[in-house]
Image (cartoon, rainbow, N blue to C red; front, top):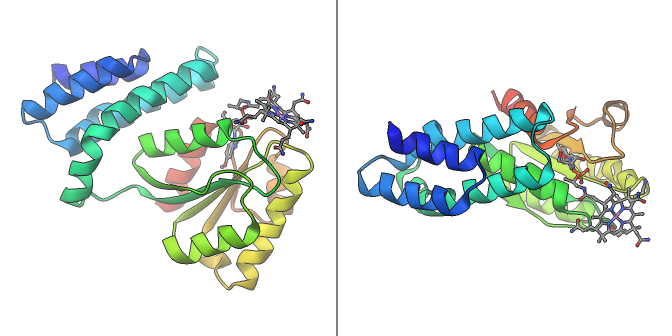
Length: 210
Ligand code: B1M
């Protein structure tokens, strides 16, 4: 379908206005929101993730591609919500306490959203008790924590301890990431997974909810 290809290419070629226009046309022609999501947005962002992993795209391209995906998503999301299309899963995400860096966390959230996950973004400087409250309230499949400072990554195990104390640790998969975080550190603190960038975060999240 030519219009779906146009939406997909607008995402890959980082053109938000074109993504929006092609999505509008597709909806007017009767293409369903679900088909736009599954046949244009998700494969488009998958391809962006591949280009990023292989070093062809850098952070600015990924951010604008995500903007293009969001421009399309803004039009189809109300329809998807109304039609009850099943989401890939629910994610609560935040940058840990003391840390104000949010570019990487936002990128992870955008890529997960592009892959069909529902995102509850708690923002930055998120206290352990706020992660716990959101886990109880939102009942997510996955909790994502981001940290960019060697000092604030030490707050990640505090969140895991707080989840245990509140009796909800087993109800959610905990994924961690951010520049100073490593796979070894994730294992050491008892997280369920680590990913070094936003596209591998999507692959990991998909594996964990299936
Ligand atoms: Co700050 N900062 N910063 N900073 N900053 C760094 C991180 C630093 C490495 C710079 C340096 O010294 N070379 C350094 C940390 C040193 C350390 O701890 N080892 C540093 C410092 C020291 C500080 C301050 C303390 C500076 C000061 O005030 N003296 C201060 C701290 C403030 C605070 O948080 N309390 C500070 C402040 C800031 C700004 C506010 C000015 C700004 C943040 C703006 C914002 O985020 N809105 C800022 C920035 C921009 C940076 C650098 C330049 C860029 C970070 C970034 O956005 N990268 C950074 C140096 C650098 O990295 N070159 C630096 C792009 C982003 C896409 O990458 O966040 O790594 P990243 O995310 C990646 C992966 O890590 C991964 O996926 C993303 C996409 O691939 N990922 C996840 C991230 N989270 C994930 C979660 C997952 C999975 C993957 O969950 C599953």
